[in-house]
Image (cartoon, rainbow over all chains, first blue to last red; front, side, top):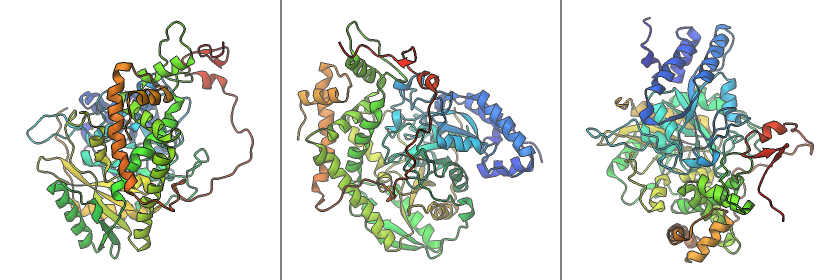
Length: 501
Length: 95
């Protein structure tokens, strides 16, 4: 076999790379060097914001030694990946794309990134994101915007890769790494995956340990995998999941071999189509994508069932109470005392001035806005009217899903996003609520703690990728991945962005 | 429910974020936009509904009430903007 040109190596899926690494056909050092070269040439995407080439080569050489020992090696051994900046990585800057964590180098490693490391995965560096994962466009980052490798045909306008895991999405779509970690609080894995034509899975709440991941909204945050295809999502997710005594909400359940579940057989499965997701003013292309996807699952032998999730309309307002409320508590720790930025103080300033100036300088406008909204909805006199009411509506949203699952629905098919990727700067205008609507199809899944996956399913008239979302039953990621695999095979999405960077 | 400049200043104070006086009217307006969006929740009948407290019904794990970690003062202080003599240092708190 002829050796691949180096830039072809970075296009491999995890499964292909794994098989070739095991066959001794390529080394992790070769793969890693090829990725590092692509990263160096992709500054225009601003996806990798802290590069770790020394760590990468050290881990690649260690992985090669493990592979040469010819014993059983984990599937992720030797696979070069990117890590979202939200994950604390020992000795490597980890600042959640915020100025307030400028200079922070954790003394510890997040459980998820540690599991990947132990499995032999090679960290290439840290990936851009919205500040504290608050955003849907990657425009709130202290590092500046990450850029989508996709462009509209015949138009060089810079597009958003989505957010908050925008750097992860951009890097995987542009073949800078084989896969990346993401986190998802309201759609932050699935929306950017859809905007960049890649696959993104958010597992059931509690599948991945949250320990060492900078917290945004603790009852909604989950880590997940962003990959080229569904098989890779299955492989990488398995390495990320598992019980962790350091996260009290992490589930003590066995993690199945997700890849083994990919049979492509969904005959007799019941796929729900929720009528409330048919929004007024939904672009015809999204509508068509959704009905095409429905037809594909039907052709594969699934039974299509119209379902109702009556409280869908209230998911976004619920999210914009609960998310900020939890954020205001979680972000109280950034006070200029223990880590990160501290404001320069004036003569006579006391500790209160230190807090106020530090937080005003350290947090960007969207983070400040959400912390203050959260503070307000939790404050005396408003707690019941806002926060408790939102938690009750959340119960109803979760009950909607429980009802359809009890009726025998195996998975739910929806669009992943209300549009394809739009231009950077297009949504930053004055109205924060308009921006929040990006999460309309994804946020219900976080509120109910369910697993969800976005799969690329087509291109719009401008040549941009569009994704479909499948939502599964709690803890049944294996079955969900199999449905997604079936959809992926039927959709046959193979397009890649044309290289301009 | 509408938030005015004084209430916006109060919320900023509670959140310990300094907001200059001239930025308060715009902040109050943003709050009102977001709260207007949230007000939709008032349409929902939540009588007799329990607020969600746990995403997945599970009993939190118990463990022995013992010290399991510690002895790493240097590592704890290594990221502090100002650490002195083994402590975090802050401006004077008590007169």
